[in-house]
Every structure is written in structure tokens, then in C-alpha cells.
Image 1 (cartoon, rainbow, N blue to C red):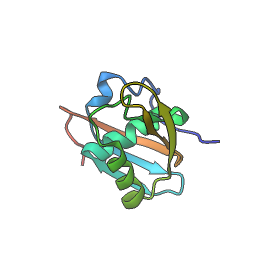
Image 2: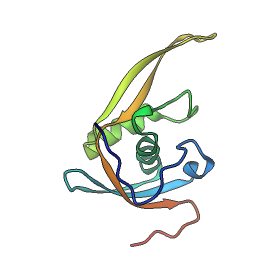
Image 3: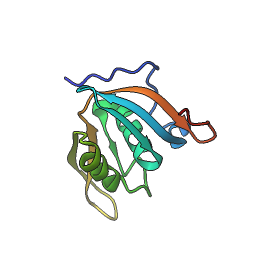
Image 4: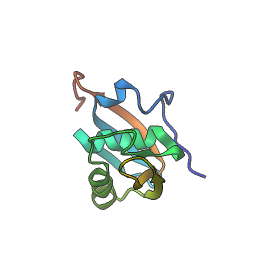
Length: 118
């Protein structure tokens, strides 16, 4: 079972406030500290907030989710599952739902307009 320990109350990962995340400091379950910025910070944060529900490009159109997931896997060693889902409509096919499996403890969230703490 995946647990997400955060010092803040988890909310709706699709809220407007989550569009503003520009920095993230978090610790993995093996003690590594991550310092992420820009889109990688945003992606890690929404994956963390979504929990096992995961996120998909249908919920975040126009974002390069697969690229951010690849970078988080490759550069930061995060375990992120890609689950394929079918969708209908004029462009029917499949899309990926991304689920974070690396437990994170979020230590700091920086939003646009905040000052970064050194």
C-alpha cells in the first residue's frame, strides 16, 4: 500500500492553486531529498496529491505529462506507473494514467509569487 505523508492537508490536485506550483522540496522513503523546479516540481506535486487515482492528459490538456514523467523517473528515480486507458470520441484510442508509487514527504511547496527559501 502506498502512503503519502505530508504536513499539509491534501486537497484537490486539479485546483487552480496547483497550477501555480513552481518549486518543491520533498524526501523519498529511502531518505533522498529532492529539490525540483518548474514543470517537474508541478508534475511531482500533482502526482503526489492525486495519490493512487493518478493523473492523465485528459485532465491536464496541453501539458507534456509523458515528458515530465520520463524526467522524474530517469533523473530522480521516482517510481511512476503508466496505466493505459481507452477513451472514446472523435479521436478514440488510449491514453496513459500516471500513478506515483514512490512515497514522498513534502517539505516545501513554492508557488508563483512566493519567494524561494534558500
